[in-house]
Length: 316
Image (cartoon, rainbow, N blue to C red; front, side):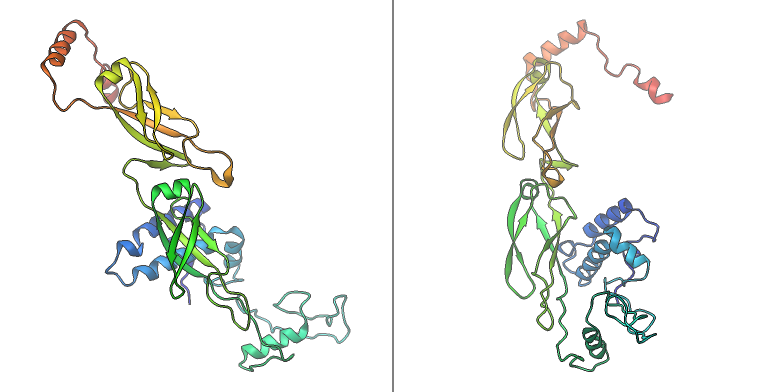
């Protein structure tokens, strides 16, 4: 029996949607099988965490679980009363006997219901002589995606358990912890039923230059002392390739410049985020005598203290 999804994520039933998402991302990262190659239970924990998140992230599914209609694996719970209960012999408007109660829903042929009852009781072939058909189970996989492939979109190969590899289309702007669903790529069906789906949870590999915040890309750009004082045009990296960036005169470390439309695609394809470029002044590795003499002379005639008032503010 699957564990309680709230307990799996370390939450209570009063957790908000944001708390569920945050807990899932934290646990998925810390229990990823690729980070625990010597831990045989890591993959089991990772799959359990993904299953708990899939059940609780959907408000409708979560409400059914909270109401006791489905179990932690998403399967229907048995009804307390018998599947069929004939109270009167006369029919109702649906052609069923009045007082007919069924856990299979309205509009279902009673012979199919009897067939399912017999199958559950080990009776083999059903009442109507038809075999029971059911969809296959969903299979879960983890896929590590390079940062730029997630940002720009790509197609990657994923090794399935027993059926070789499959091409997985990574949508532009895919985020860490996102789950993709591949229809009919899961477990085989029963009795001619359709196969299940493959659920693929993405882990985005960090990049040495780019960082992501929402739909924006963040970059720290080193500039020289003369570029900071005089300004100038420099080349800055973006996820789509290098672009020209104008440094305004008198730029300080920490100043952020914005490149419109250079971020990642927003959810639903409604626009694109920006790239934010944080400037960082970097002194030359070797200070030559001319620069040292100039700055020494400049310091004597220009009393500029950028820390004025800082100590007073820190003490207040």
